[in-house]
Image (cartoon, rainbow, N blue to C red):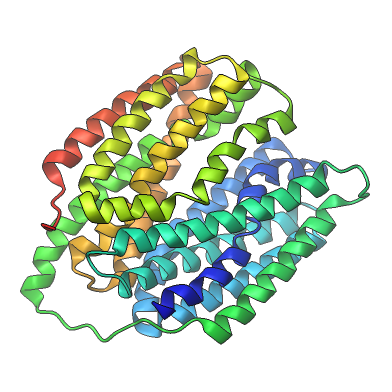
Length: 381
């Protein structure tokens, strides 16, 4: 499948900053004199703009093409890396986060639509897994480079070297995208009645996925706090905890996506949710460093198990109609859930009980898995 092969290298290089930046942004912002409130705004503006952009991007790429959407994303990522490279104060970081949010919206929706365009019922999960695998590989290599430079005392300004490398990687990704990526948008025509039937099932699924995103993000703002308070306060040791899970994320997604193709996406989602609920609920009783590392491996495994299936079902439910619009709405719903969940988790952690967010997420994942069993329909294989 030439279209899929052409995506691998550009996605690998464009993903270099993703994992490292999410870890290092608060530290970089503090170094430039930002306050905790200003750092919070950097995260909020990214999420808010993403919510506003995603439906628009979805409709746009259904008209203008998936390749154009990806090239726009690569261009914005180049500009983002450049601004991070030359940042001198908070205003630079604020501008960079705005551009990064726009880039992310174009990237994930164009990518999801393109993978759905070139896939069928038998290989859709596997193809989503392959793309996820290459993105994770890029993020792993990029973060490894970033951490080596950051923790190495030989560099006076490590961020200049890190973002310089990320700028070169993004520029190369754009070159590869222009040269190799092929357009997958096809002319689509459907009857009004068929579209109405699709809408009913689709929006039910989208609502469930938005709720799931909210549930899964309950522990997002408190996970690192729990680690620092109960496992270790050493930043380097904390980063090591996630290495085994990161290695799994660069080797397993394609294989697990193929499992979803063979045994059913809905079944894999249910298994993943139930396993995740169990492992998340075990966090409060896990105190040892290596025990927590093992627990994180199982949590990562459960998430990888259901991720390709969730995305594949979006286009399966719609029959591949208007993939750009469908994935734009899907990511909108997930984005809204991703804003509500952390607020709830942070409030509970600070004002009620520090262990309760983990128990709440575990229980809620079981409930949502039951809802999926009775509400989500899947095509017979």
